[in-house]
Image 1 (cartoon, rainbow, N blue to C red):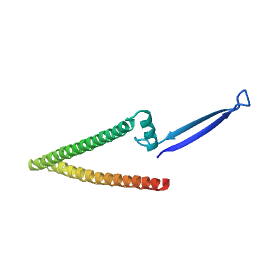
Image 2 (image 1 turned 180 degrees about the vertical axis):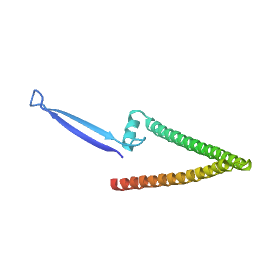
Image 3 (image 1 turned 90 degrees about the vertical axis):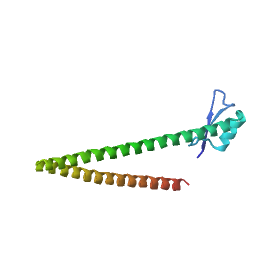
Image 4 (image 1 turned 90 degrees about the horizontal axis):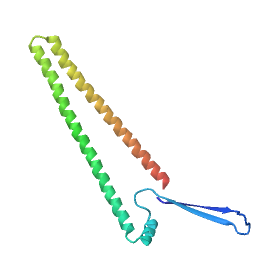
Length: 153
């Protein structure tokens, strides 16, 4: 969205019969590509500049999407590794507890098995609640963004 503001300043100089007028214009916009009027002006000054600006914006968008894709895939890989290693640790503790029980150490084995199961259930509940809270927060952000856009139009 482009926004154009102007300001006129009149300076009563030393000679009151010839006032000095200074005019300034400010154009502000958001996004990588300027408004069509500005692109046309660039094209007038240096032919081919508008195409270069649009190409740059397209390359920048592709680059940003590649970075986001890399971040998401890295997060998934890390998550899968965490699940796998968590499974190994939990099964080791449970199998260790079963081994202790078979060797006659009932309390130690039961403690290992019980503690492992309680840890697994707790992490499942905490993970479910945090994902639910994250989804609610994203939903609130999307709703507030849509409301803001509607108010601006």
